[in-house]
Image (cartoon, rainbow, N blue to C red; front, side, top):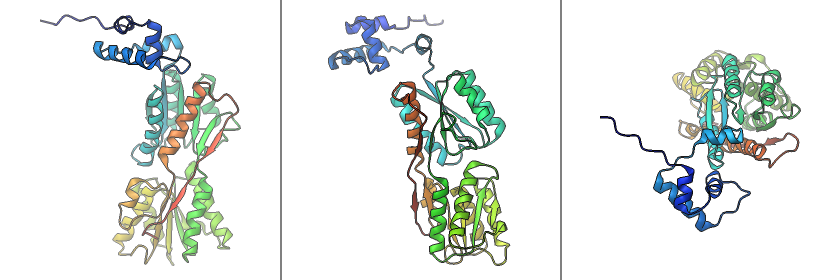
Length: 342
């Protein structure tokens, strides 16, 4: 025999138990900053919520306020530890302001990036932190036209600030230049680069930093020393194999992310080459495994959680009306992390 369905507690029930008005219950549950509720009153409301097992009807709230209280994070590769850490930063801020987070993994593919943008528009989400490899401004602007608050992470093929969009990033060119300068200062003049997928924005900035460092040291740029690869361990392994076939081979390798650097370490180990005695290896990102591989990896720390937090804060500031001025570009700090691989 099916159990009788009990009536779901309402906001009016909470107000009756707490001996307050429904408006006060709403102020407490929605965390409205413009309303001051006494500590004891707030305690009674929350105790009544707990006693009744009350769950707010978010659909009704969303309809009243014409908002979904949901933001999206669009990332290229959820298997790359950099991006879960970035999304963790986004979620921490979203949680603290009463927003849900929906994550779209695009595999760095243009059609999946377009599909994610379409889904955000169809769901009428309030905001999106957008990390895209392939989309142009014409494909991003419809989000803004639909009223979605957009923050761009990284450096796409257009200038977000000129387009009126907030942006958070590090200086990829300067960061790559700093780690190549470090290798040059160690006496390496034949430095190979595992650059990533051609045409993607992370690759282009880091290649620019690599070439600028060499040029500043009056070292000719040899295109054969720059190898394209998937941003993965397998990609780094294959590109390192190509570099080892050169004669003379590089004395150091700079990979545009840590996963590719780890793939290079695997290939060098198979070739019975000692790191760093025979060949030095440096990466980019400082994912958690960078200090666990052997030898531990010299790399650039981007601090993904901080980037994610700042991106989400920019969205919340826009949605809450705390920032109504021109678009912003927040360039966050990076750090060169020197370990045993160099």
